[in-house]
Length: 190
Image 1 (tube, one colour):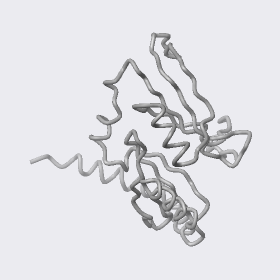
Image 2: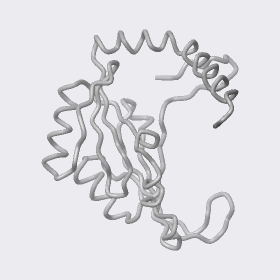
Image 3: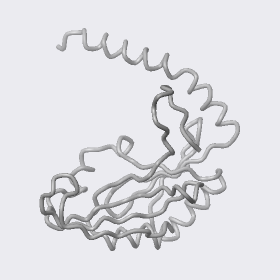
Image 4: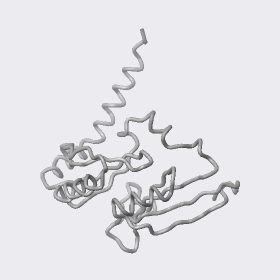
């Protein structure tokens, strides 16, 4: 499926190609995503130079197929293990986050699939939160071995109606938020 752009001169976008993140250990990450979650490892690239700056940096870039519904355009979750920069540890990043503001969500078919995922993960000793009813979809949350928060989400017909209503109101909500922030900023701090 192709995104219909708001600007007709915009080139088309075909959905997620990949989302890339740091990891502490490539094998630990592979074992979780391939053996526990079931996403096949599709690519592992040992690279010794930064692709844009050319600076020496030794890393392994790994990709997992997360499915896209289009065999010609798969979507991937990708990771970098950078051995020479242990100070860039994801643990430090996540101590300063709530999880809601830095996570990766994947769509599953329906609520039955969501429950099946929860069962699978729990059976593999992964702590799972949810299912949580967000009104317009339901989801479960869990963490990978690097501390990244992951989400599986599903929407069924009644929830889709709520999502559609919220979508129709998005611009008004943005304007309301912007006005609230401006009013808040105008009030002197005590």
